[in-house]
Image (cartoon, rainbow, N blue to C red; front, side, top):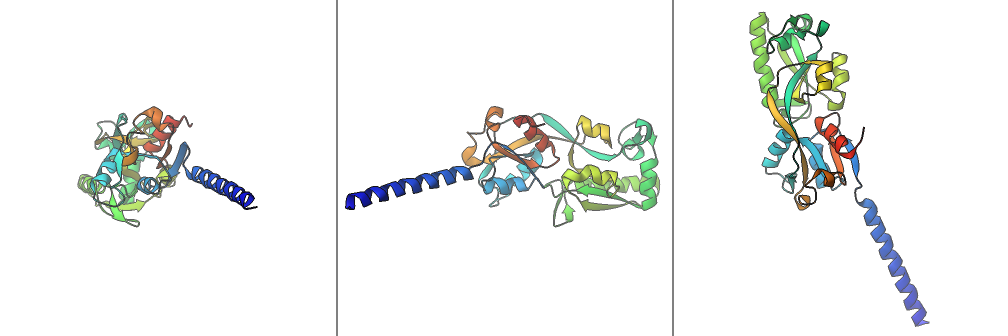
Length: 258
């Protein structure tokens, strides 16, 4: 009888161990892509181990990793090279394919005054932004500074002088994945927030000259740096990136998602 009980207990133990192992396996991330609402969420996903790789702007990743914080200390940039890209500032398209007068200030081209007149009449320009350090710093829905926000203020101070009327700068926090609809609805007049210039965006908007070089990068946990060191390795990872971002486009390309 004791032998039977021992056998039964052993079987139950084996079943329990197998069930626990299967449950643990189910918790592991599977290859694929998840869109996030903000680039900063990449660090949260990696630290919570709900993702293996986060693809994001090098400018932001390098800045955040240089900050001594609990979110950054276990993360690093993987040794996977991405192509160089450039930031530009986007305004609504001018008529007949001309540059609007706003972008015409930094692009030598025949200009259309439609958008400039619209902004002059309002007396302000509304710039769509996300909290994308070091381009835009802040808390909640307010920006306290940053490379792009400071540059925008300086540029529109010059534009105000040129047109002879003060144009105030207002920053509006947006969902990056909805920037196109915000521009179309005229809830914002401009996207100035680490915007990667692409052929599709250049066709949709009037975009200024390139003003900053950037590239995408793959952020991983330090323990996984040797594991995710090539594009082939990234294809086996659970990748996250900001919705509507160049990082999201790169992730989809790596994983073959259209």
